Each structure stands twice: as structure tokens, then as C-alpha cells.
Amino acid sequence: MNAHILDYAAVGIGPANMSLAALAHPVEGLRGAHLERRESFSWHPGLLLPEATLQVSLLKDLVTLVDPTSPFSFLSFLASEGRLYRFLAADFPAVLRAEFNQYLQWVAGRLPSLTFGADVHSVDFHDGAFHLRTGEREVTARHLVLGTGLTPSVPEPFRPLLGPTVFHSGEFLLRAPEVTGRRIVVVGGGQSGAEIVRHLAAGAAPESITWVSRRSSFLPMDDSPFANDLYTPDYVRRFHALPSDHKARLLERQKYTSDGIDLQVLQDIYRLSYRDEFIGNNPGRLRFLADCAVTAIEGDPDEWKLVVESSGPGPAPAVLAADIVILSTGYAYALPDFMAPLDARLRRDSGMLVVGDDFSVAWDGPAENRIYLQNGARHSWGVADPNLSLLAWRSAVILNSMLGETRYSV
Ligand SMILES: Cc1cc2nc3c(=O)[nH]c(=O)nc-3n(C[C@H](O)[C@H](O)[C@H](O)COP(=O)(O)OP(=O)(O)OC[C@H]3O[C@@H](n4cnc5c(N)ncnc54)[C@H](O)[C@@H]3O)c2cc1C
Image (cartoon, rainbow, N blue to C red):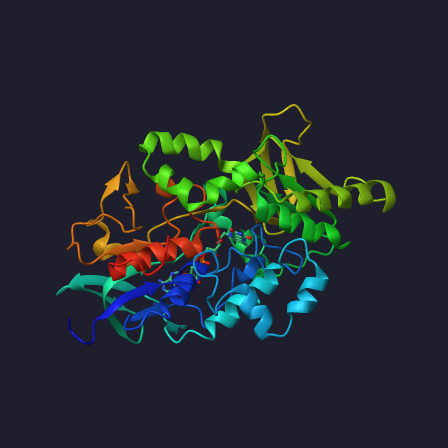
């Protein structure tokens, strides 16, 4: 193999590809490059609210479930920063997301294979290797690992209006809207919407906060033991082997094991609403519209008018006036634009990428050159795919496949 051809090039440095880099680090002779467009690591910075917590155990870090002895674990981070005893004494019910972000930044600073400020804008395959181009350099590698994360979903009616007063929840802290005296509508009844509602409701500033959800109620995440069993290697392997139509049915049924709202956040919101109504003398400041869909938006940045269709029994206004509209409407996987030259060579089933046992995408290129997919295969691997739970395990599966040996027990 040509000396300048790396073993692999990984695009995107979120937790998924950082886990791969951390587990690859001790593997002698393995040469990989990790490329990230951001100038430095930050974990969903637009939603890094100070009170937000992880929805999973701290053991579901970048490495621990595959290699508890790794120096890149969350516990190693706490120890290295001299906080182990204080962390124990603080006894947080869940790890603060801001602290997990510090951990991820700490790991990022210790892995020489990571390059920030490298936006991959094209990739091609020839002469037995993938050729990736960023603004400044070309990287050539035998395998490609896609870890570019999910893309914010914005429903059609809002798309032409995106800007300072209508935006996706992922931009909340980056937009930092002035909320004092404003009427705010949060669209979407999942975890991001809940976190933003809690954050806004805890302050006195907004005139009103209306939370609209299509769901029949503001539904909790099922975090019970049998639901958590769906987030294990054993289960996802069995899921992966099922026919696609069966998988689609299960995904719908298992939705609330990850897409529901953390119970603590729901309790906080309910108590804030109670406080407004009975103690703070501010009844009606917080409004909850379940079973409602926003079907259209009219007006201009001086005043938006949202057309609401209700399918439930509760009273709901037909039109909602708003100064700021926050779209907590989720995320979906989209193949990154730089893959356009290879797109037609990837195999699909009913429009979805075919992803194998080792997380490689079926394609018409040589079998010794693989395209691995991190966090893009929910349709194929199940509800755990976008989650932190199996991050380390999936990276270990990919590494074993690249190495052609069982370096990590999976
Ligand atoms: C606010 C929030 C909180 C979450 N909290 C939890 C939780 O508590 N527990 C849990 O299990 N899951 C959680 N998740 C889900 C999931 O764990 C995270 O989304 C996680 O960040 C996914 O990691 P990733 O590496 O796949 O993608 P991302 O973290 O999205 O990283 C992808 C990276 O790729 C980069 N990139 C994209 N295109 C290019 C390109 N062309 N060139 C170079 N770089 C590129 C992006 O800049 C980005 O940094 C959360 C999700 C969100 C949105």
C-alpha cells in the first residue's frame, strides 16, 4: 500500500468519530485522520443550556463500555481534573451536559489524529483509495468513516422565514434572542422543546411561552429497564437481522424509549407552571397545546401568526400570535453533500442506505475499501443508532472490521 495512503479518513468530529479516534489511538500502526469543519470541539453549542443533563449513564462515554481501562473515559477526565471526590459529593442525578462537553473537549485535546477547521467539501474514489478534499488539503485513505451527524428538520411552511425570530432549536443559544416581554411559541413536543421551555419558563422575562405538540400529551421518555435493553449490542444485532418492514414497525413502537422527554424536565416545567399560576400571580403565561399542529405561518418579524389545527379534545386557538418561533422539530439523517460523486454507487433499499453488520454501506466499489456510517442507520440498526449508548461499541465494531481482527471484544 502506498505510504501516503492512510488506513482511514473520518469526517466529522462529534462524539461518534471521537469515540473511534479514542479507541484507535492505542492501536499500533493504524493511521487515521479525523476531519472537522468547526475550529474547535463543541457539543451542540446552540443547546448547551447550563441546567441540561445527559439522558444516559456516565458509563456511556466514548470508551468505557468497550474498554473500561481506556485513559479517555469520563472517570479519567474527572480524575485528571482533580474532581473525583467533589463530583461524588455533588451527587448530581445526571451528568450536566456542560460537563460532558468539557470531557469531550478534554479528550479532543489529547488525540493527535484530530484536525479542526477542516471542512470536507468533496470526496472521490480512484486508484484504490478515497480522496477527500478540504479547502487546504487532500487526504487519501483506504476506508472512509462518515460521522457528520444529523441535520435539523424544519417543516416546509417555516423554511422561507428562517432568521432571527424563526429558527431551529439547535440554534437557540447561538441566536440568543431577546426574550424580555416577547411572546414565544415553541413548536415540537420532544426533549429539545422541553429543555427550551424549561429554560425560558424559569426566567421571568418572556410575556408568554406557548408549547405546541402534535403528540397527545407531553410524553415522558421510557427509561425503564426493559426499554433500556433495546440499547444493548445483543438487541441491536437481532434488530439489524430483521426484515425492513418489521424494523419500521418496531421503530414506531420503540420511539419513546429515546424521543420522549426526560421525567425531571417534565416535572420542572409542571412546577414552574404551577408557580406562575398559583404563587407568582402570572396565570396563563405558560400554555401547553398538545394534539395540535402548526399548519401555516403568516405575518412578518413584527408579528408572526401561526395557524393551529387541533385534533384533541382540549381548547386550542385557531391562530397564535408570536414574536419568536422556536422549531424544536427534530433531526434527520441526510447524506452529506460532499458524497455527491459517490452517491449513485451506494446501494439503497426503498430509498434507504443498506448498512451491513460492520456498519459499512453496501456499494459497488472494491470490498477492501469500505464506507462506514456512524449515526446514519436508525432505519437499519434501530433506536439506539443516534444515541450515545452504543457509541463505543459501534466504534469498536468498525475498528475490528477495518483491522480484520478482533482488537476489541464486541
Ligand atoms: C442537544 C442534544 C443533546 C443530546 N443529548 C444526548 C444524551 O444525553 N444522550 C444520548 O444518548 N444522546 C444525546 N443526543 C443524541 C446524540 O448523542 C448526539 O446528537 C451526538 O452528538 C451525535 O454524535 P455524532 O458524532 O454522530 O454527531 P454530531 O455530534 O452532530 O457531530 C457531527 C460533526 O460533523 C461535523 N461535520 C459535518 N459535516 C462536515 C464536513 N463536511 N466536514 C467536516 N466536518 C463536518 C459537524 O460540524 C459536527 O461537529 C443529543 C442530541 C442533541 C441534539
